[in-house]
Amino acid sequence: MKKNPLFEQCVANVAPEVMAEVNLNIDIANRIYDLIKAKNMTQHEFASRMGKRDSEISRWLTGTHGFTTATLAKISAVLGEPIVEVRRESKTKYIFMSMPSCNSLMEVSDNSYTNSKINSCVISYEN
Image (cartoon, rainbow, N blue to C red; front, side, top):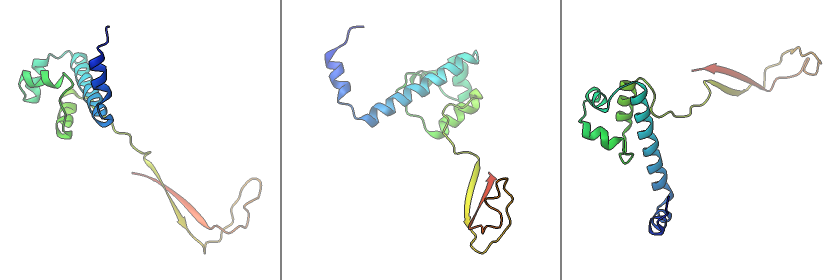
């Protein structure tokens, strides 16, 4: 593919956050397109299920459309798959609590903690 120096110069002057937004929109459009095809659905069927015009779905799939979270949620519901996934912390949470007055015998194989004073306690739970 022949490179156009003017195009290359224009792209070089685009702010990083704008490039990130464009790339994200393209990734989302590609994900939607892939799911539509995987479900053996036409763009027309997808548009009908979304309550949208075919032309709007075509614009979505160009990668130039910015999606609201409400629209992404509806697309996910219609296609039965997540469109965007957010990293989540582990479901197990840990709380470190100070317990200065707690004395206890702890049995550890090397006896290094026997008859020692516990200064803190770790509690884990799941959401």
